[in-house]
Structure formats: structure tokens, C-alpha cells
Image 1 (cartoon, rainbow, N blue to C red):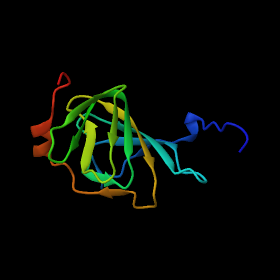
Image 2 (cartoon, rainbow, N blue to C red):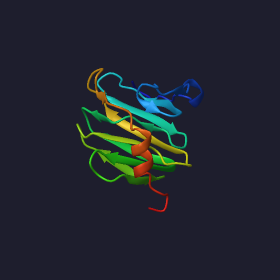
Image 3 (cartoon, rainbow, N blue to C red):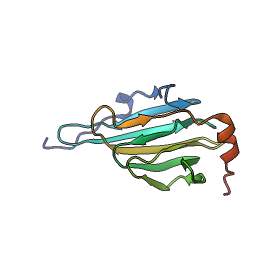
Image 4 (tube, one colour):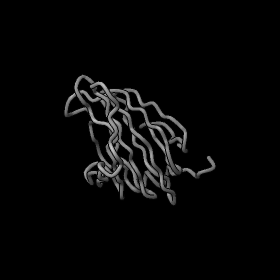
Length: 141
């Protein structure tokens, strides 16, 4: 390639995130997919209020760049942490975690991953409602 490639927004259809791996309404827009020698994946993920991922791990580091609203991320066994637009969360490989919107607020982030094969993500059980509401933090925390 000897020039910049521009993928128009209209060429990237928004899709619903798989219900097997998410709770609530979550939308995904693929921004970059692995191409040639590059393993980079970037996805804009938008969570409606209360929507979230299941517990999961990744084979590679995940970088989350919060772009809109208020969300949270929780590592199993640790208190959840708030994410706001502009915040960046770096998740080491193999760490069991989940992330999503807080109650009453939209949340969006861009997820960056280096993909190592089709099983890069290990999806686990959903974050149950009782746990989610027990750890839910206010946007001022």
C-alpha cells in the first residue's frame, strides 16, 4: 500500500453485540480489523444504560479508550472503577474482568486488541444483576 486508506463511516455498519457475551443493548462498530501482518483490532462499543460485557479474559493486552458517558470496569475480586470520556484502561492478558455502562448512563469506548487467532477472547458467565447492582457506583465516585 502506498497511500492512506479511508473507510467511510457509512461503509461500517453498526451491529448488535452477541447476546451470548453481553447483557443489555450493546452496539459495535468495527474501526480496524487485522490486515496483512497487522494484528490490530479496534472496535467502538456503545453500551446503553446498565448494559455490560460478561466476565472475560483476553490472550493479549486490551486497551479501552472511553469516548462518551460514564462506565465502569471491574476486575474479579477488586472494587469496580469508573471510566469517563478520555480515560484509558489497560487490561493485562489473562485478567478476568468486565466493563460497561453504569445505571442510568450511556457509555462508549474504543477497544484496541492485538488478535492472536480466533479464540483471542475467553467469554465467561454474565455479571448477574445482583452483583451488578451491588457494585454499581455513582458517577461522582
